[in-house]
Each structure stands twice: as C-alpha cells, then as structure tokens.
Amino acid sequence: MPEGCTPADALHNTIELARLADRLGYARYWIAEHHAIPALASPAPEILIARVAAETSTIRVGSGGVMLPHYSPFKVVENFRLLHALYPNRIDLGIGRAPGGTPLDSFALWRDRAHYPPPDDFGQQMVELIAFLNHDFPPKHPFSQIKVSPEMPGGPEVWLLGSSMWSASAAAQLGLPYAFAHFIEPGPVQAAISHYRANFAAAKSGLRAPHAILALGVVCAETDAEAQRLLASARLFRRRIRQGDVRPIPTVAEALRELGPDAAPIAHEQTGEYPRYVVGAPERVRDQLTLMADELRVDELMVVTIVHDHQARLRSYELLAQAFALPAR
Image (tube, rainbow, N blue to C red):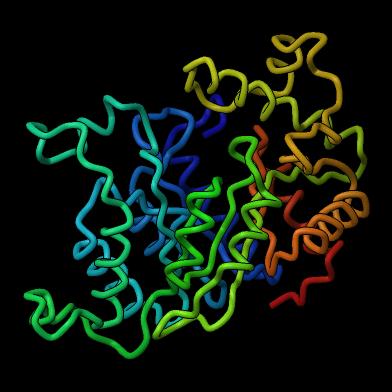
C-alpha cells in the first residue's frame, strides 16, 4: 500500500495490475497473506483471488501463499476447490509455513490458545491437504468418507513456498512444484533448488518431474538511473520492516531523504550467490534474470515490484514483458 493511498486504492491497484499482466502474457499472478501490517493490504488471498480471476481471462491466479499453520487443511481445500469450480484450470494453491505476521498476530488467529504455541505439524498438515485434494486417504481412515465439495474434475495446482533447505526437502519428498522466495531474505537459493531437483520423488498423482520458480524483486524502467531512483522506496521499506516499522511504502523523495548516503545503487547487492533485487533498464534486467534462471535451472521466474508510484509499477511489468517478448493476449 503506497503512502497517501487507502487500502481500497491498493486493492484496486492490484486488480488493475492483474488485468495488465493478463494482457501482456504473464503466466501467473499470486497474492500473499499478511496479517496486521498496514503496508500490505491482503490478509485473505482466497478472497482477492476470486476477484482477480473474475477480472482476468487466461492468467493463472493463486496464493503466494496460504499460511497453512493457521488453518484446517480441509477448510483450505474447500476454499480452493470452490475457486477451481469457478475458474477451472486457472487456480494455484501456494502453501507457506511462515506466520505472515508477528507472534501476537498468530496467537490472535489460533483457535486453541490453551495450547499455544501449537505443535509444528506442518508436514502432517501438507500430507492431509494433499490427501483431501486427491481423494487419497487410506480406505480405513475416517477422512476417506468425506466428500469434499464442490467436486469438479481436476483441481487447483498445489505449490510449496519457501526460502530454506527445509522447504526444498519437503517439496522434493512430497513431489510438489517449489517456489523459492529469494526476494524475502538471504537464503541458500542455489543449494535449495539443487537439493530439490536432486531429491525429487514423483507423487502418485500429479507432478512427475521437478518444477521450480525463482521469485525475486525487480524494478524495470527506461533507464538504469530511473530504476535505481524508484528502488529507493523499496529499500527504505525493507529497512523499516526489519526495525518493526510497518508503515506504507514511502515516496521516493522521503526514501532518499531518510536513507541519505545509504541510497547508493544496489543493483549488484549480493546475498549469497545472487542478488535478491534486479534493477535497471529492460535489457539489463532481462540479461541478468536470464543468467540467473539458466545457472539455477529454474523453470519460471516470478517478480514482485515494490515502488511507490502505481504507474511506474505498471510500466515496470510492461517493459519486462517487452524485453522477454511475451506473447500478448
């Protein structure tokens, strides 16, 4: 949510960007789940997915992701089977393990507060969720009697999201496609994706070979200098978040003023082997993204563009689509 805008403005901006991404030829549009953070306007991705899918025609729409520890796997499956019934073969169910907020937010979300913190049973939750989706409980399991509604051929595409070796290993063991959130925190991106590919076990139903997304920050503009200027808002936002300050995205002028000497270009900022943000003119961004995708052997790139000016955000995605010669719809 940019400073000076309302949450309603931010949500309408999201819908406008989704329409543009659909026309430009992008493959997926994912919506995150964050709680009690004024800078981020979506605590319920399944609601916004329904609206975005209605406003678009071809692009896949999904969660990036549903924070499963807060919820019943059965209820999550019901929500996304309903979305699949409304928009067949266009819904992605991205699942995350992180809380999407502070420990206090998680406590407020948790139903059984007498046993807080809850046990870490994320692996069991994932197995249960997949079993509900695939009608795959053993015959003697009580849940095998449950008929998940609405029942339609096929189902949402399940993804495991993460930024660690744990998530890479879990995605490989479960035979799921894997999205690595490189833009969030420094992480072992090369080791994680290599481990996922090397240890992938094909599931009984669904994915037969590993499939990986690399998600990272991108700011694309007509010139390198303009892209670096726009990036200042994201840089200050990131610094504030680390300090517990969750105000909306600042203007470029405010960011440059507050960052001071720290506002130097960071296009080559390294966190481990690879930068989390790729910034510059279209050709520079395209070449760096292509190099990373080739070296890491990822199947798709997913980009998030955090800038204050909504028109500059739209233009960034437009320039990127042109640089990669995406087939416009």
